[in-house]
Amino acid sequence: MFRATLGVSSPYASTVAKAIGPEAGREIPRTRAEVRHSEGSMTLILDADDLSALRAALNSYIRWMSIAEKMSETVGDIDG
Image (tube, rainbow, N blue to C red; front, side):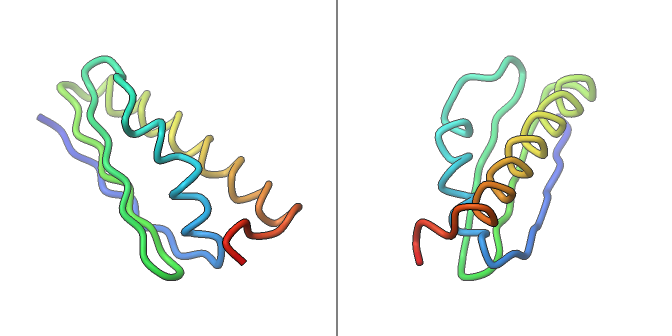
């Protein structure tokens, strides 16, 4: 089992966590994801059966987080 933990600090962390939360609940082959957040920060925890699955999941989640962050900057925080 392989694990990656990614911590992010951002004024939009809560919004980003809520945006990618549904993806964490989906079945991704050989990978399990958990998203946690608190005021100003979020943590993504990925567990994978092999390194290839971990790399693929990290690439996907980082891309989704980047898109959610950019959208929040553009349209504003949905929580605020």
